[in-house]
Length: 266
Image (cartoon, rainbow, N blue to C red):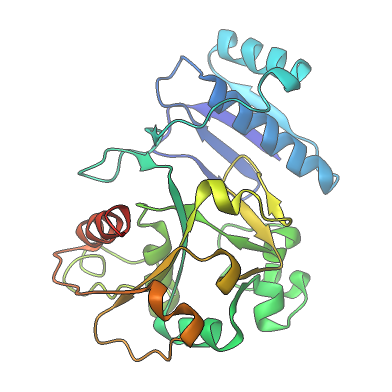
């Protein structure tokens, strides 16, 4: 894996490259150093070495020093707001109190029927190597990525964007994310609680991911269901089901509305 540190649009992993966006480039925070350390350590679990590039020699030197003193950054505090990505027009960053996983209504039916969020390997019963080879793996993620339930920050629109991409079979355009936007079902978890999950992994790229499965009755904080969706919610989860009307102009307005509901939930 190649780690590129710089002033990108956002942090992402694509085709063997970890693009690490720094929120105040060329300054680098302890949290961002922790992320890079976690990415390197995760990759080493799967025998992948990392090369690091940065146009700012001072940043590169700081990162190398941090990698030599990992314990000093392993517990770097998580900011309440991350500004690596500022796509959200209201928050101008990622709020870190909650993480979520977004599924289409069709897939949400399967999730609720089995009672767990499952990794792609578990959910589809297909070897990771086959999933890696599919056309839908546009980012060319390695096989091990499919052994985990992926999670995004709670106010992020990336999950719904991916649901639209799967629905359309292509990257969504502005209209798809605007007047034609169809929201998915969001499964929300408190960050501090889910971080105690025995299968939890910090890979430096995502807020966290969970190996194999998340049993909903044990970990779910709330799930947001678009009004009008036909879902059979199990009795054990009914008090955690929140129905929200999609009267929003686009995916960003929906994400903000949903997160505000979660923040204010009693």
